[in-house]
Structures are given as C-alpha cells and as structure tokens.
Length: 327
Image 1 (tube, rainbow, N blue to C red):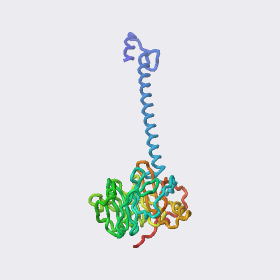
Image 2 (image 1 turned 90 degrees about the vertical axis):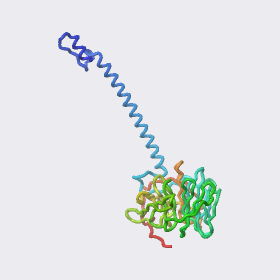
Image 3 (image 1 turned 30 degrees about the vertical axis):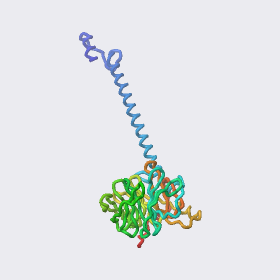
Image 4 (image 1 turned 60 degrees about the vertical axis):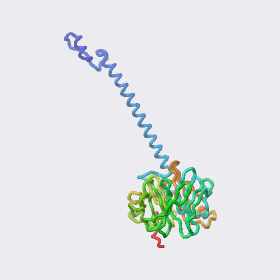
C-alpha cells in the first residue's frame, strides 16, 4: 500500500506522507483520480438512461391521454374535439359499433324488420357485407371476441353468434341477462347491459353471468345503460336518452368520469337532420388509439378526442342520470 511503502523508505523517521498531499504520495492520486473518473462516467450513463426512460414513458402516457385520458386520477368531466367526420348510413338504427381493423367497422342495427349485422367501410360508409335478422328480432349490442361476433336482441332472450369472416350465423344462445342492450369485451369476458344500472360480466365459453355490479356515481345508481365499449381498461356506456357517456370501472362498477357531448347531436339538428335519434355507438381502434362515435339514424360518424372540461357549469347528475325507463 502507498503509505506503508513510504514509511519503510524513511528509515524510522516520522513520515510526512499524506494521502491528500500530492507531494508526499505519488500513487494515491492516480488511483483515486481513476476511480473518480470511472464513478462519474458510470453515474452519468445511469442518469442519462433514467432520463431518457422517463421521457419515453411520459411520451407514451401523453399520447394515450391526448385521446382517451388516463386511468386514475382523471378528469371527471370531458368534452370532445372532432378530428374527422365520415359518412354513415342515415337509415342505420345503430345499436352496437366496434372497430374491425383496416378502416372498417362491425355494426349492429335495430328496429323490427330492419335489424342487421353489417361490415362497413370507414371512409365511405358503404356496407361491405350484411346479415339481416328475422323481422321478429330487434337487434341490439354487438362485440367481437376472437373470430366470433356476439349479438343480443331487445325484449327477447335470443342471442346470436356470427363468423366475423363472412357474417354467417354460427349459433343461437340464450341471453343470460334479463334483456339485451349493450355488449363489449376486454378479450377475456363479455360485458353486458340490459338498460338498467347493472353491468354484467359473462363467460364467453359457458355464456353464463359470472359477475355483476350496480353502476354508481357518488353513491347513486346510474340507470339506462345502453351501448358499451371497452376502452383502455374502462367500460364506456352510452346512457340512453342523454348526451352522456359514463366511464365505468369494470372491477366494481364505479363511474370514473363522464363524457358530455351535446354538440354532436345539436350540430346535426342545426343542419336540419330532423330524423335523427339519440347518441349511440362507441368504437375504439386500439392499434391507432382512435375513438369513433355515432348515433341512431345519424348521417355521420365522428372521430373524436377528449378534452377536459375545467369549467363545467352544468349539473352532470341532472344531465346524465335520469330515472329508469319502464318497458
């Protein structure tokens, strides 16, 4: 070691060596300097790596939030910005909507004698394939799991499964919910609504209800849940006869936030589209992080982004939480 070797050279005399004194210690500075340089270099590389990692994570988080927001904490009330408008069949009484890839949608339509499952081109609104239901059925919610399209019907326990490749009817099954309104999936279970405040989880193999939650906002039930879509870990539900979409936790049924968008319907009415019905139809393109909305008998389909409403002057409970309807 440096200090011991210097003491032997002093022939027993008191050494003036000091590891901090470069005149009396020739080896320590070189070793210490090398260590410090290596340490500083390593520290710099680690800091740079962490900094770049944080930037990447923030970028991913911001890109996701710019369209659909984040998980908790989130903006309790959002409006929308229209990014694009596309043609939509004004005779389609939309009851279910989902993105099918390659700029196409699967859509379920209702009304007796006019109900169908169809594949539709985004850019033109053209129906590329269609399977009409018997006139005794009123088509409702639709979702896709694997290559199977599931569709429920209104006021009947009859439900259908189709081959998504050609819309051929594969089988019929008994709807395990009291009624059929909306369907969605997270890729594992089917989520369903029956027009009440209940959100159902259905096993796609046994087609039995495995879980149910009462949907609540601030402790109060949210009735009239209609068309559903699964968006980035949340179940989104059109609330029938309102301009509202509830963002629901599929784990416990708690409403995480609201999307309030009367401007779409009001804009169509102002353009003298007098025959339109309510907002209904949510589709999420997970691959490109795009959101699409339409309504029953609407001539347009909209690509939208969410925008926080920092100064919301309305009463969201009065606007979005009506008393239950009876049929």
